[in-house]
Image (cartoon, rainbow, N blue to C red; front, top):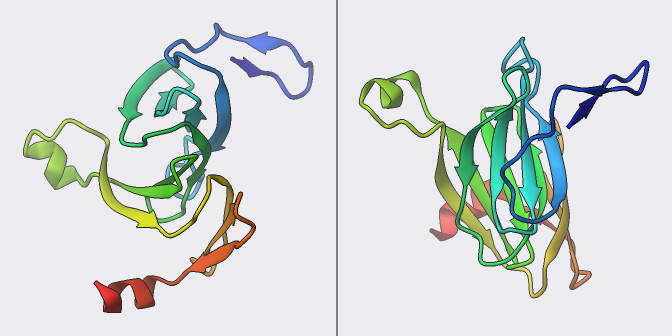
Length: 153
């Protein structure tokens, strides 16, 4: 459900789809879509959902985690990040117009799974310098280095 920030009144009907409570949400960046009408939610049901707030409909359900999704972030380059109690971060890329023309109906595709924490991942922060900082239950915290990851692959 959304609320009017001025009056505090509920707007529209509650969103329905997750089977357990929502743990995190993130708005689509305005520079990616000027309408800024989509948000992503993470849930204890092990999924993330992309919602269109204008229509109130779920546009896509992102699956692939083995435990609850604790944190979701919408990156500035069309990427979504989902962090989980399963100790992984899934990186999802928004499909291109060519993918849609080819009949690939999904909005996002899984492009990478980041592994390395010994315990659940509770939080993430994305910087404008494209760094991915994690906050894990194992207290290691860490920076994901894209270049180092590419060279080790």
